[in-house]
Length: 359
Ligand SMILES: *[C@@H]1O[C@H](CO)[C@@H](O)[C@H](O)[C@H]1NC(C)=O
Ligand SMILES: *[C@@H]1O[C@H](CO)[C@@H](O)[C@H](O)[C@H]1NC(C)=O
Ligand SMILES: *[C@@H]1O[C@H](CO)[C@@H](O)[C@H](O)[C@H]1NC(C)=O
Image 1 (cartoon, rainbow, N blue to C red):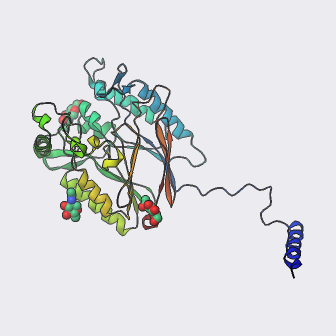
Image 2 (cartoon, helix red, strand yellow):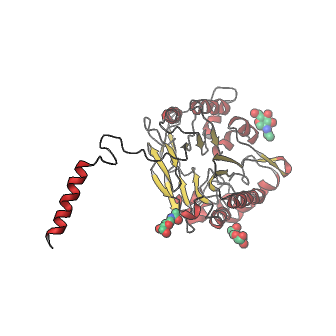
Image 3 (tube, rainbow, N blue to C red):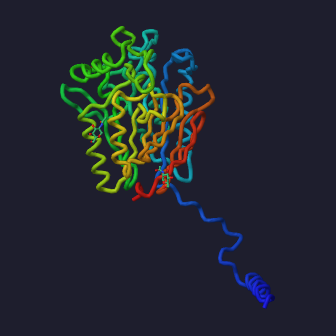
């Protein structure tokens, strides 16, 4: 009786040597399934033709080298094979406010700098979709931002332009670009300016003292009440909600993108939009539709998993990477995960897409 299993094994071994194998040893292993789509991401280029400097907290800033890094990013994106990138995302602060400084020699120095960055990005042949940040607003008006960054602008009451729009990168996917400088003190008049001034003045005593960008004396998320941040107005919030309702009905998955981060734990809370709770409310109410949010503004890689399961990713800045270090990302989207491959100072992440968010 005890010999039987041994005989059986021997029989199977001989059989396996005689029969042709189902998967011959000399054929290549099957290729992993390709991504549904892939794209590049870059944030906070902040190019200006001025000498190196440093941030308020002393982090070095390489204003000129940011242009070289942008060119390297575009060239890398262009060469990605076998699954080429179909587009790129620019998360704002494309030029630094210093590009508009009177020491610059050109007639319209900020536009000249922006045009250099856009030309660098355009060496990647597919479209780049942008949001704008506080630094564009230090140097340009929204009509110039619309024309030169190619950001579609909605025209709201009092002729105020607000830059929110969507793209569909693949069947079943929608990207919702959010303008968190809808209500802010840069380049605004009328009710949008009044609202931002009221909020800043009521929440930050430094504002009325003229120190509008100082969070001194404020704690935690209250540090967001500074003038370099902005908020999202009610018309835009209603529009975002209607886009999310439509995507939920169509079983689409959504990525929301803005210059400023959505979640307090994904970044320095000083960088949050004034009414970030309203945005988080939306991502969390639609957590079976919204897979992730992407932002910049903070200048360092950051990540938080929200309580409803939405991934919040903050991308590193080009500006603060040493010359020769090119900071950008390549994102590959699969049915069950989103893989962010970071280059330079950018961290890499693999984000799970749970079945509730799958089609
Ligand atoms: C924006 O700036 C341009 C100059 O580049 C000017 O012609 C235009 O009137 C400005 N637009 C607004 C809305 O202020
Ligand atoms: C969050 O959404 C709920 C339900 O729509 C609403 O009652 C609440 O006011 C919202 N909170 C914020 C901060 O927007
Ligand atoms: C997905 O589901 C797993 C298991 O239920 C859970 O551990 C994980 O946190 C979820 N991820 C997200 C992004 O919701």
